[in-house]
Length: 327
Image 1 (cartoon, rainbow, N blue to C red):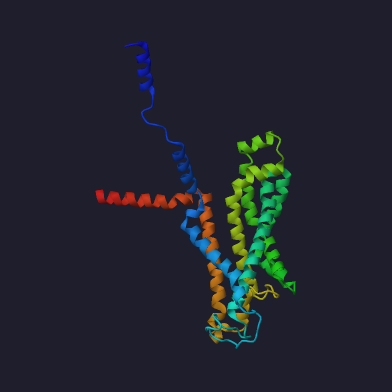
Image 2 (image 1 turned 90 degrees about the vertical axis):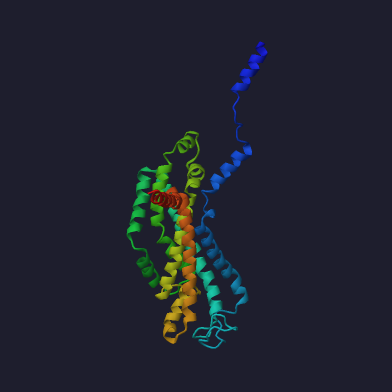
């Protein structure tokens, strides 16, 4: 055998017996693995998104096809019928129209209050956690004071001193009283992120603090920020409903809370006018459940233990069943 044949035989023997995975296979595997981290595949997220989207579409489309919610030309306390799908109130207001406009008011209160709360959380949480030192201590002191102060009683005190309350004022008050808990969580998470190697590398490269926070830290906080934002919306909608039921909500706008207040003052329960108070209560409950389900799905993304808990439970049950059959 010649030297050339021997070399060829060695080369053939040294080659791997299995071909490497193709680029398409690797990309597909990574894509599938990445999809497992997204909440879109969670049943909780799907159900929650459907509920929230349905209410948002109702708030946008329903007022177009309904009459004036403040009109009193209709018969008073009329039961649901083909002309008035959800009946009328004591003053003759169409309940379907009021429910549609009230959906817009409650959603706006929740969104504005949630936006204010998340902005304050970023300032007193992310900024404090990144800066450190005396600046963190000062911002943390304000956060701790706001955590100690009870939110809802403070809102009630503030609202009682303002005779004319718009939904913007109620949303502002709810927003500035609901950010402290989220700021505390964000500060702890930011303190952990600022010690990572890529943050140190960005600082050594001469990047400005604003860019380091925006590019290196904020992307890692997006799931947590989304969860805190949804929680702030839920708190604001429930808080506005509670304030309105007590007569401290917006008195120049229609929300689900003001409808419940009108039903309470109009003795809807005693008159048997269930259509006056049940629909807004159901809408508040459905919206809160939808946002909570989305929040739970995001929590599973943030905490892998929650995401893997169902699979682990199934494996335990399967192992116990197999052991029982073997025994």
